[in-house]
Length: 202
Length: 202
Image (cartoon, rainbow over all chains, first blue to last red; front, top):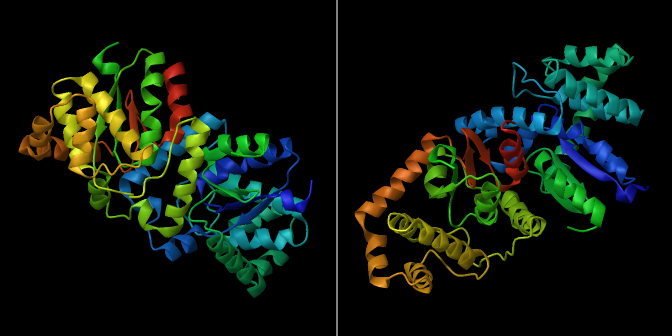
C-alpha cells in the first residue's frame, strides 16, 4: 500500500450520489489494499466554470434525479432520505474537513461520514456553520477552534485550490474517482471501478 | 407476453450509449418474456426544449464521454469504434425506421440494428440519406420507396410526435427505458433494470 496507488475521490457534501459512493468507496478500496484520498469540493464552482446548468436547474432532470437517487440507494443498500433543503452550499463543511485533515486524517474521515449522514439520513441543514459545529462537537472537536477554522483565510484558500485542482483534472460532476489515472464519474461506475481494481485494466 | 408489459426504449441513432443498450435490451427483455418497443427520437429536439447544453458542447464532458463510451463498450462486450463525425442529425434514419415499422416490425428492428452498427462499428455517416438508403438496400428494402418515405410529411410528423411524446414522458437524454412505469436513463442502469424485472420491484 503506497501513496502512488491511492484512489482519489472528489465530492461535494451536498451531492447525494457522492454520499452513496462515500458509503462504499473505502470498503472497495480496502479489498484491494488501496487507500482513498477524499477531496471535498464545491460543485457550484465547477458548474459555474463550465457554464452549464446544474442538474437541479433542469426540471425533468431534477425530477428524475429525486427518484433515481432513492432507487440507487435501495439498490446499493444505503440508508437515504431526501433533505428538505437541496442543493445547499457546503463551504463550512468542506473547510472543516481540510482543517481536520491537516491534524488527524482519521478524524477528518469520521467527520466527513458524519456530515454526509447528517444531510442524507437525518435531514440536517449542513450549510449552517452551527450544524457543522454540532457535528464536530459530537466527535469531540473543539467548537471555538473549528469556528475559527471555518472562517480562516488558509482554509478558504485550501478549498479554492481543491476546486481549481479538480477542474484541472477534468472533473465536471460528482462523485468523481480517479484510480491509476482512470477517471470515473458517478456512483454507477462502481462495477467498472471494481473491474479495474480486479484485473488491473479495463 | 402482452402489450401492457412491453418495455419502451427511447434512443437517438447517433447516441453511443443508446447503441450499447440496443445490443442488450432485447436479450434482457426476452429473458423475462417481455417485448421492447423501440422509439427513435432526435436528442437535439429534446436538448433544445430543455434549454441546456448537449454533453458534446461541454469540453471536459465531451472528453470524458469519448473515453467512457469506449470503456463501457469493453465492459459490456460490445464492439465499438468512434465515428469520424459525431454527433450528427438522424432524421433520415429515424423516419425510415417509423416507415418500416408501419409495414414490418421485424424488418424495422433489423434496420435499426444495421443503422446503429453502420455508425458505431463501420464509421458510416448515417446523417446522409444515401447511407440510410444503402443500409436499406442491404436489407432488400426498395430504394425508391424508402427515398419517398424519408421525405414524406407523414413520416416527418411521426418523428415529431415521437419527440414530443418522449418530452411529455420526462425524457431528457438517451438511452431512456421505461419498464412498468419506472424510468431509467443510461445504459449504466442495466443492473437496476434487471433487478426490477427479476424481483418485480426496485
